Structure formats: structure tokens, C-alpha cells
Image 1: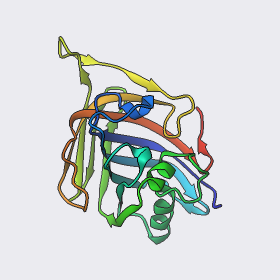
Image 2: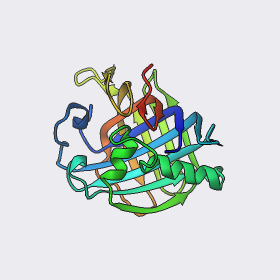
Image 3: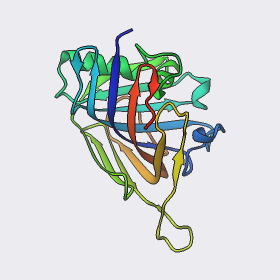
Length: 212
């Protein structure tokens, strides 16, 4: 198994209620899962291939809960990545060289038998985790906009986070309100408007999440 490690940040938006039922081991809000995620790698490697400074993304759709499978996924990798880096990111983000259930990428890959051809397009992520403000853009494919969850009475920013001490994605994430607009690619997201979003720092290896 090739050794790999990634430290970076992510912005995710799905079609469920704020907080995301998956984080609590319950079924998705409307029974299905549709999600878009953008990743910015600050530091990383796959074997001898450095991944520092790269960006990537994914679009995912499941007809039911993720754990029931039969999902679709399409990866997007920024064209700044060279051939070795592209192969490395595809391997990591489909669960290769990863212990079973060790990362969310392993789960997504295992639960998505329908893997669409990877797209190479510019990917950017402007993220302020502290203020729960973010924008992720995959040129010609999708955009995610995220902002604080509003207080149900006053409309003022409502701050809440989720801690997952044994999580395979993050140890702590800030919750937000998000919207995804898809404009290209093979997977269209139609339900992600004013729904769950989260922002988190990532530190992952093929053996799982590295605790802070």
C-alpha cells in the first residue's frame, strides 16, 4: 500500500437539514443524498509525489442513504496537477491505498459503483471557517456558497459545530447554510439550496484521520 498524507481544508454542501443526519447515524432528510465538496490541500504526498497547493472536488449522488450504495460520483481535479499528481488524487479520492472504512473517500468510493470520468477544470476555495463564510468554484461544473446558519427568530448568525472524536473525515467542523448550483459535468444537483454545509480542516492518511 502506497503511503499518503493530506492536510488541508474542505467545504461541503448536501441536500439535508442543517447538521446532516449522517453525522448522527440516522437517515437523510428526504431519503436521498446529493453533495458537492471542494478540497484545498495545503500539504500532502502520495508516495514520492508531492500534493502541496493542489485543489480538487467531487460531486456525489445516492438514491438512498450512502450506506445502501448504488451511488454516482464524479471527481474534478485542477489542471495545475501534473500526470502523477492527478493519478495520486484519483487514487486517494476513490479509496485506493486506504484501510477499509478509514476515510470518507474510501466510503464514497465503495458506495459509488457508478464512477464517471474525472474532469480537469480550475478549482478554487475561498474559506473563512471562523466566520462560516465560503465559496467553492469549479469552473463550468458547480459553485458552492456558504454562510452562517441564521437564528430562527432574529436572523442573526447562529454558531454551532459538530465534534467527531472518532470520525473518518474531520474531528470538528463548523456548520453552515449552503447552496450548490451545478452547471456542467454528468451529475446535476437539484436539492441543495439553503441546506446543510460544513467547513473543516482535514488531516488524513491511508490509515485514517490524524487526531489533532
